[in-house]
Amino acid sequence: MDLNNLGWNTFFEKYLNAIDQQGLDIGRICCENKISYKLFSEYGELTALISGKLRNSSNSREDLPAVGDWVVFKKVENENKAVIQHTLPRKSKFSRKTAGNITQEQILAANIDTVFIVSSLNYDFNPRRIERYLTMVWNNGANPVIILTKSDLYNDLDEILYQVESIAFGTRIHIISNVLNQGIDVLRQYLSAGSTVALIGSSGVGKSTLINKLIGEDLLITGELRKNIDKGMHTTTNRQLYVLPDGGLIIDTPGMRELQLWDVDDGLNQYFDDIENLAENCRYSNCKHDSEPGCAVKAAISKGLLDKNRYESYVKMKNELTFLSKKQNQKASQIEKEKWKNIHKQIRNFKKK
Image (tube, rainbow, N blue to C red):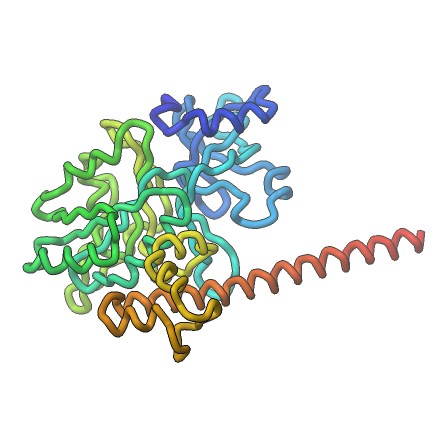
């Protein structure tokens, strides 16, 4: 495989030069399993494990390879296997807080140029969820594009387009139908050779079907919406990177039941900059936009200049990030405490000798 067609460029080259490359090669992670990986390289597709040194030097799951990462590996002689020695720095990423009570980052895709935020025009359509996706994408260095699928199921497309445009603020929007094969070809403009697109969205919105259309064959299993509850089946269980025949790469991700934020302060400020700008005109610098006099945000809502639902979405995400920050600080404090506890234990053991 040609590395340039896999997305290799000067950004990664400069970091590679700082590594001792003797006897090593480079590749890109295309699939991540529980204990192993698959990667694309000049040798073709290889199955890989991470080295013990890399695992031991990693402080968190974020330090280990993710789908889309460029890695430095040593090939096992006469086998289609490799041992990953280094993960190169990421140009961009899309991540969320791990589902559940664990305070940890889960990287869904790395080194992406464009993110297709896929939402279907049925039960799944939710402007507030699209806002969360946009906030997360803007924060992590990729360009968002909104894809509205199943247009054949919705009659008033002008009305739905107006709703999305009112929250998307310049983000490109495409309405497509996989069933009628409408609007698919225009998406190829984002998939030039070496460029990487990641698809995110709920289950059953048509991500796998769309990838099949772009690839030109039924490579991925797709699931029909369950008619009795109008929800989609999970057809993608692992994140996977595919190389398209005409150039470009695409990453499929499993449908997400939870979309918990992770470290998106910059993205939040960028996406909700209209609210941030209004807040600068409040009478008090520490205005909570609740009952304080001279609140520019509340005034804008009352005059119809700011949508109340948009403001409530902003507040919800702000509160979520504040809670996450507290959890992260508690975790860091616990790690520091355990570190010094082990140091003192080692000192006591040394004195006993």
